[in-house]
Structures are given as structure tokens and as C-alpha cells.
Image (cartoon, rainbow, N blue to C red; front, top):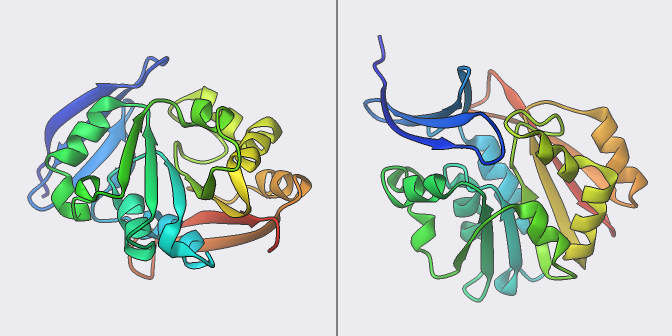
Length: 225
């Protein structure tokens, strides 16, 4: 039997829910109040893919400007940093300060301490607000702020997957840039919204861990395909 110890908790702003960080012998997981596991240091292949897939498609990764919505356990950030160059800059928008603290503390070892990389910038706040304030700033925008188009932890996250949210992300993106979205499950309606917004869309299914079990969805959206 595996034994877990709660080592952290954090209220989710503007909700009545809480995130909990648990530690086992060799790994960690984060769950939301009500018992739903959101992420684990054992199962992060799809988070890795969210970071690496769009950046590998860039023509000039050396100087890439990347925005990540949601720090999570740091794996998407680490995957981006592994692809982009020394003159790149990666901004991570994270709403919950405790999540940043966890990554600077016990979680950092599992993802390779990407917050210590000089190319990393932390923006404490809502990525939606940052998108509304940005114009043609980013080569890649990678969003993993909830369970996908159907918000699980914060209903306000639904805006990111709406037509106005997609339009705001498109405005914040450079003309040759790439949008990437993570989701626990496929969602044809969201796929169609991306296409209706003028994007060429590639939908990739990625195993959460290894080559069996649960698979997650990543959408890659670009204007030039």
C-alpha cells in the first residue's frame, strides 16, 4: 500500500475549492478538493508534449518568446526550455502563489528546477488578463490552466476556450506563432472553434505515462499550418 502525506494546500482564487499537494516515497501529486487528482510527478508525458511540440515547429527557437498558462509541476516549462535557445524568454503565468513556492521547493527536483533557469519569467496572475494586455508578443502560447475546455477548478477558465478567449490569444500571438492547448479529453466543439477562428488545427493524443492507459489531448493551432 502506498502512503501519502499532505505537505501543502492552497485556495483557488475566486472559488470555494482548494489545491492539495501530497508526497509519497518518491513522487508527488496535486489534487483539488473533492478528491480529483490533477497532476502527478509520475505521469507528465502530455505536459512535456505541450511544451515541446509547438516549440519544435518554430523556425527560430533560439530567440523564441513563449507564454505558458499554468505552472503545474513545472514539466511544460522544462520541456520548453529544453527546445528553445539561449536568447529565448519563457513567461509562466500562474494564478496561485503557493504553486510557485512548491516548484521552488520540493517539486523542483522532479522537473529539473526550471524556475532557476535565467530564461524563465514568472507572472503571478491570471493568464487571461495577460492575454488581453498583449499584442503580437509571443511565438508560442501554451495553455494548461484547467482540465480542458470544460473548466474543472474555476469556471472563469472557460473564457480561454471561448471564441473571445481564442481571439485574445490570437492577438497576443505573432503572425507565425503557434497556440497549444492541453485537455484531459477530446472536445470536437473546441476543435471547431479553433478552425472557425482561422487556424489550421492539429489534434495530438498523448499518453499520460508510458504507452498505455489514459491519453490526453493537445491542440496545435497556427495560421500558416
